[in-house]
Length: 209
Image (cartoon, rainbow, N blue to C red; front, side):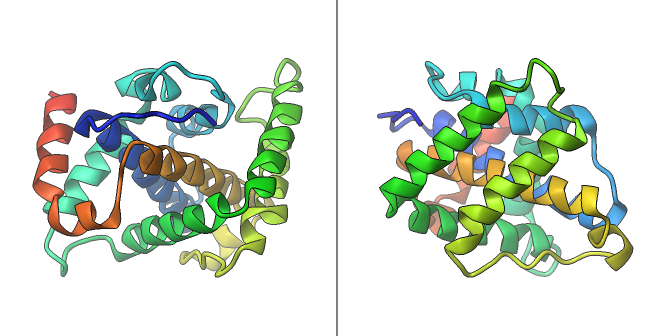
């Protein structure tokens, strides 16, 4: 995973929007059993852009994280009472797990090797194929899930108990970790989330305009 030495709010906003995008998709699948396939693919593609030249390139351009920018803006503008608590909880959990992951260099290397092995098979399967979801879910379970605490996904039990949905959720959480790593590499911190929301909101609105 590339290191991005940048203090630009744009890079931090794009990468934090990537975390919110993954969290929002997880919430949709858990509660509705479905989410937009194009947005899911855009999110998962970030896992295989190992040596992208810029943060924007990780997402294939601003459009690749457009949904996340909207969710980030809505969440930061909402009051505590109207904010989607599940999305907030998933984002916080992903940021916590990212710190634990980056303290384990051997696991980071293991993650990259596992993702490279999956990438070599993408000539045979599309990113939205159940086989790819299953493989990414297995990567999540054998790496991130072992760090603890596990992310408890809330939703409708019939959707959550569906194997394909469970695999999609884990694959998207893995992509959320990817964006969390990127955000931290761009100088992101929890203090910014607490006290610098206005800058993120302004940047989201500019990028979405």
